[in-house]
Image (tube, rainbow, N blue to C red; front, side, top):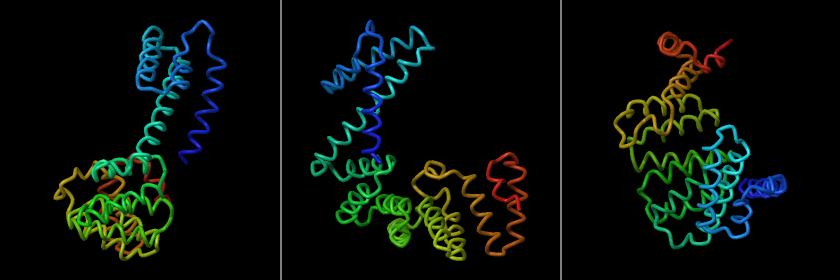
Length: 241
């Protein structure tokens, strides 16, 4: 994924440089030729000032976007080269960055190293479960998420994700049990329950599990509640049957 982004950035970069007006200071070319922080900063300031002068200057907005993409990839390469010098906390944050960029296998490798060093730290287990889930390795995803819960029993969003993984594994009864256990810990965890997962998403997922486990009375009660609190939610499309 990241390599594809780099290729697209390079292709777009060459086209942008070719099309950029000759009378405009080409800070972007200077940054590409010498990708230092000072040149990055100078380019950001230049294109930002161009936008301030003319808010319809979409060309400068595009240049800013390419600058940020190039710099992100440059910083990722730097971090990969210096991975052994990072603290476990820094490795965790870097793995999360890779996870957000779709670099699932690379993030898993880093999470595993943290798991070995700090086996009782719940968050790397949870995030490793998410990475495995994204590449469809559900057994490993389930195992990692169970470990996240084992190491922090009140880890609310780990229960939610585990329930989703178990649902994808066609373990619908187990998924419902997992989610209901997680809901019992909502607000009791050290993290904000809305930070990692939307409460509305969870409620509609809960409704799905209730219906598919033939808990019809509970399903209807939750449906009535959501019809009042979220009548226009996109989630209702899934229940048009």
